[in-house]
Image (cartoon, rainbow, N blue to C red):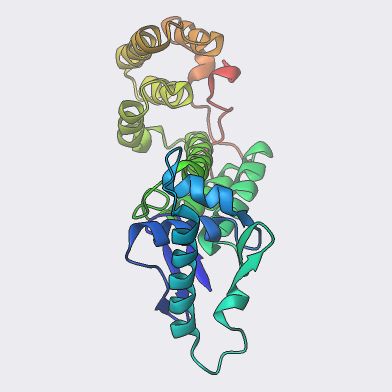
Length: 278
């Protein structure tokens, strides 16, 4: 079965979709797909579908959804299939399991992220940028974009989104090390607006602006972040951000992009641009 979750939910058998149109059976299949090969307990499924207010008929209704999913699987498998629908969507002690491979896009995304972040730590900025660009290109929209989200799926969607943001931070840092600060300005400005409390994004924006000859705009980005942190969390920016702010005020030469070196081929190599390096 082909499963994809980084965008609209896709589950196909021999190019035949087995994703139900009804919201709750789709939720059940999505949760089972994200935990492919593992048992998802009945209590977890009930909590996902109804939260704190399940109807008295909830267990029976869940069984109805499982039967609906198996009918769709049977239709896609055909009469000559070696495995039947109950072999794919299995009943297990205390719950159900989808006996298929894990979502292909999420698995590939994780593999590329690990490789890209490892390359970045080792100073191979060009390789890191390429790998992380490939990883992020697997996203077709928000995770499970067309699935109704309950408690259990929310945990998974948040986990995937946090992993995406981590990969995005690393990819931008790799591109900054390659001297691409001018090309990043539009993207970083949009990200700072979308994530007004995200310090790493604002640090990247501040440094990109400074390297583009716009120190006043870099200082303005810091002040907007500071106001947001104080208003929303009653917190000042971290010590790292404050050090970057001071370095910009003092026109610290270590903030400039150095001359190209032989490191990383023909790329521009600069030290990590996060505030920790200031």
